[in-house]
Structure formats: structure tokens, C-alpha cells
Image (cartoon, rainbow, N blue to C red; front, side, top):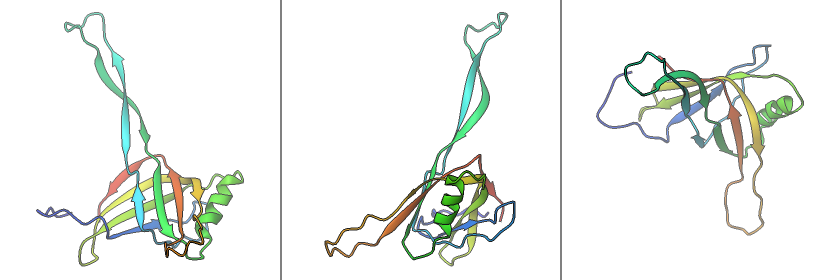
Length: 152
């Protein structure tokens, strides 16, 4: 990825769901919002009795990942909900999810992959007959086992 002086816009991106490892089709879905892309390393304190400094060393151990939230306007496609239902009904159905940032010319410039992502929560649209003209939105909350930058 080439560096540049101006940051990329947060509004040009794609979300792709790979097919499950057991076979099947990828999910085709467009989203208007992606949030929660983060990871945190846990550390353990460790000190040997012979250490000259009276301070504990910080030793990295496990890491945890943040829950990723995807939002989109309700379009009538049920693929996302079907995946949620599959997991809700007890299936182990992880997928690799790739979030790709695009530049102004819609060229791929950066990709982040969520490893073994699974749906944890689905939120349907809030419906109100107020005549406000809001878009019916649904949310999908994903848990995953790691996030990585991918070379393009």
C-alpha cells in the first residue's frame, strides 16, 4: 500500500463474507456502517527474585478482539439472518469476513480480515408509522478470533 498525505475517506468500503469452510455460497451484502474494529493484548506481571530492578516485567499472553458491528438498510435479502439463525440453532459456522477500504477512484487500498467470524447478535429495524422517512436499518454483531491487515 502506497502512503499518501491525505487520509482515506471512511465512506468508501466493501464487506465480503467468504463461503463457510463446509461449503456453500458467500454472502452478498452491502453495509453503510462498520464499527468495532479493534484488538487488545493482555499482559501478565512477572518478576524473578534475582531481578535487579524492583519492578515486574510485562509479558504478553492472550489477546482479545472487539465485537464488530455492521449496519445496513433493510433490502429484503435474508442471507445475513439465515447465517445468524444457523449459529443460533447450534451450528459452528465461522466465516472469514474481509473489510476493504477504497480510494476516491474505488481502487482497493487496504483490507482487514476477521478470522473465524460468527454472528452474535442481530437487531432488526425499528419501525414507526410517524411518516419521518427514515430508512429501516438492521445490525449484525460479529465475534471473531483475530483481525489482520491483508496485502493487496
